[in-house]
Image 1 (cartoon, helix red, strand yellow):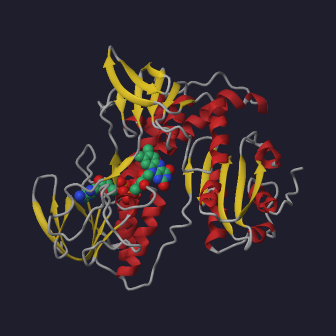
Image 2 (cartoon, rainbow, N blue to C red):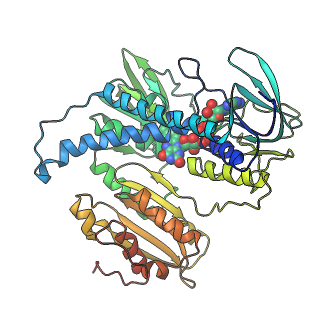
Image 3 (cartoon, rainbow, N blue to C red):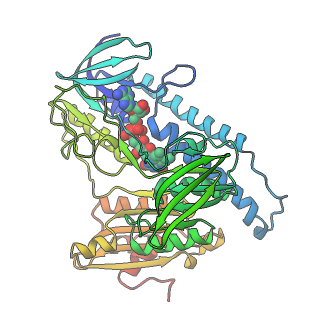
Length: 473
Ligand code: FAD
């Protein structure tokens, strides 16, 4: 194996593996260093997203959604089934199979594109060079014309609720419960807390979500967040805002959580507790003191708009740098950096990155929220279309929620779109494309949408921006 590469990528998550494949496709001799090993000591590619994040959580969300469909909705379609039962072991086995299929797929893509995978922990030295310490403790140094750091992130831990991986778990532990907890506490009503709370709630857990903030989903459009909150409440998720967890004690197989609200101290007893209070960049032990790469005050690697660090030829992408901690954001940064290394004038549009909460219904957003436009003093128009007026949504018995579109009053340019409703993740992507092309609301209003589709709700919201939706009074 050559120890000199055009590009050495540290980390094989969606930011790193995509950067590595793109760099190799552009003719650069590329290696990808990954430290994560499976039970058999083989290197695990795919990072958080494929192994313990996006993919396994969606596998469990899909299983639990099917279970609810069978339990609560088949009868109204005239489909008779015996009361369904969940086999948690089989559900986890299916999830693991999907994860294995996808991570194995990356190994295949590396081979196909000529990326050299290297097992070990990478550290950026001056030069740039990368020191790799493998699982046997052996150290080698790779010469690199360019280094891309894609070391990702790890869950934040909080002192009042230390993870014990049995009763108090982080998001990774919450993907592995061997049975449905009777009572489940979740600290944090963010994306991960809501998704994992939904999985186990649908399968029968009584779920209580404790959130320190007074506002629900403050990063989302306030109207959409309110609607989502109402729907989740109807589904039985008990979301308690303004609750600050002060302690968690494990005794006799139960977790007693103490928390404070404006009206005093309270206690709840759970079978399991998920701590989902956010993630932090994994930037410790990654940089030699003379690497020339610096961190910001929150531990993120400091980069410019093109993901270049302060050290020449060293870049950083994904969760380890500023911006939303989302797989697709990291992947696009990886592509941009690979192209820039290959001499192309690539850039990234940070204003048009979709974000999704994969509850049911899904909550999805792109661009500015109404409250952001107000605070920035932007004059805007808004169009809202409820799914209850969509023929397709009614036909599938999935008509909770709405599409909301925001456009500039003067130019009609689309400034944001916010959806809570069926297939919101896929619907919002239509608006992402429109925004990337600088579309006006009228452009979408004048576009032909197939009938009957959920997409028609996007069309109607665009028509509603000028007050001319067809199917609402
Ligand atoms: P990571 O995926 O964290 O990968 C970093 C890799 O680098 C790891 O494999 C790590 O072992 C390796 N590494 C770190 N340091 C070193 C080193 N020194 N040497 C060698 N290797 C190293 N995002 C979405 O967009 N959609 C979703 O639906 C979604 N769902 C999620 C659900 C859950 C439960 C969680 C936890 C996260 C979810 N995310 C989702 C977030 C998403 O997983 C991350 O944004 C994404 O994985 C970040 O990619 P990354 O490549 O920057 O880092």
